[in-house]
Image 1 (tube, rainbow, N blue to C red):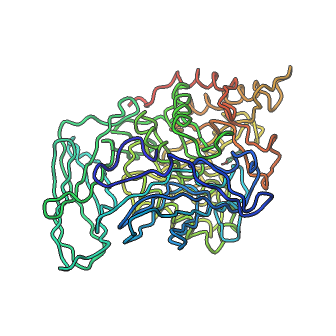
Image 2 (cartoon, helix red, strand yellow):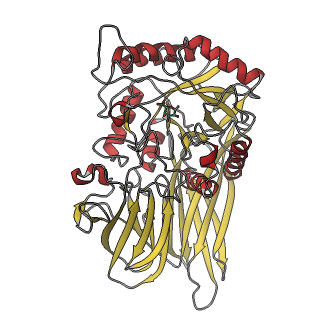
Image 3 (cartoon, rainbow, N blue to C red):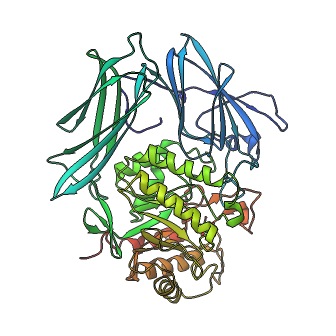
Length: 562
Ligand code: ADA
C-alpha cells in the first residue's frame, strides 16, 4: 500500500508489493545468491544480512504496455533503476519518492531491477555514519502505472481564509509525453472539490509541460484541526474528445497556519505543541514499517496526550502522513540532515542533495494538512558564516515552493548561533539533566535570554525541539542512576513540565518516541549500538517515562488561552 486512499480510478496502477521480489546481494558471503524477499523491506531484517552494508539488486517482473510510470516511494539510500536491462533512473536519498517514465513499452512482461546501495560512499553527503541507521533496500512501496500520451503530473491545494470565507488555490500540471499525428489536440481537465466544479482547457502542441491555477471559494466546509481532522478530496479528470484518459485524486484539509508574534496560530488559535520526535525504525522492519506498525505508533503517541510528531531527521513515508492527516496529528516535517559540521556541509554534493530533498519533500507532501511546519538541517553549522549561507538558501527555496507554512531548524549552537534571524520559529535542542548538568528551569531561562538579547531571535515563537534522557528498558537500581527507567522518568517529568510551564515556549518535543538502532560506524558511547532515549523501547514496550509524560501532557490543552 502506498497511500491510505485511492488516488486513481481511471489510470491503471499496480503496486509491486503484493508478491515477493528476488534479492541478490552484490558482495559478502552470499554475493550472487538469490533470496525471495518482501518489498517494502530492509535487508537488515533478513537474518543473513543483519549487518550487511553494500549494494543489493532487487528484481521483479510486471505486465504492462505503452507509456509506463514507475514510482518508488523510497529506496535506501541510493537507487539505480533498470528496465529490461537498460538503466532508466538514478536517485539518491532514502527518504523521498521519485518516479521514472518510459514510453512505448511493448505489451508483455518486463523486468524491473532496482539496485540499492547503503554504503557511505564518497558521493553521499547526507547519509553518513550517524545517530540513526541508514538501512539498505526498497524501504517504501513501488507502483507501476500505465499512462496515456499525456498525464496529470500533480495537483496541489492551498487553503486560505479571506473575510472569514474559506478559499482554495488549486494548482496542477499536465505532462505531454507524445504528440499525435495532427500535432495538436483539445483537452479538458474537469475538477471537483465538494460540490464545486471547475474546468481547464488545453490545446497541446509540441510543448511538454502545462501548468494551471484556479482560486475558488468553497462554502459549508469543516475546518481541519487536531480535534476535527476533517478531510476533503480534489478530483481531476482529463478528457480528450469526450473520453476520460487520466485522473488524479488528492486529499487535503481546510486549515491555515501562521505566525503572530510569539505564537503559532492554527485557524487563528494559539497552538501549544506537545510532541515527540520519531525515527522510522523498528527491530523487525528497519525503516520499512508496515501500515499497522505505523498506526500503532500513532495510537501510542496520541494516547499519551501528544498532539505533534517531528519527523527527525528526514521526510517520512506518505502512509505516515496520510494517517496523521486522518488522526489530526500535527507534523513538523524535516529535510534530511543531522549534525553536519561545516566541513561536511562543504561536501561538493551537499547543496544539491539537500535541496533535492526539499524539492521532493514539498512537491510530494504539499497537500497534507497535518504538516504545519517545515524543518531543515538539524544541528548543523548554524554558528558559521558558510553554514549560514546554506540555511539562507534552503529557507529561500522552501518559501519559494510553499508560502503557506512557517519554517524552522533545530539548533544546538545557541550562545553562538548566527542564524536565528532566518526562520519563522526558533527551535532549540536542550538536554539539561542529561548532557548539561543544570536544573531545567535555569537552563531554559539562560538559553532563551541569550536568544532574545544576543541571538537575533526576539519576537518569534520559540519551541524546545528536543529534550530527553537515556533509559534502558528494564534497567533499575536503588539510587536511580543514569540509564535507569527511574532516572529517565524523573528527568523527563522535570523537563517536560518546565517547558510547558515556561511562558515563552510554544511547546516541546521529547527526544524521542522509541529506541532506535544507530549506524555501527557511529558510536558515541551508545549502549547496545542504539539511541536509548525512547519513552518506549524498540518493541514499543512502555518505559516508566511514558506514563509520567502522559500525566503531564494530559494537563495541558492544545491551545493557549487568548
Ligand atoms: C541531538 C540530535 C538527535 C540525537 C540526540 C541525542 O540533539 O538532534 O538526533 O542524536 O541529540 O540523543 O543525543
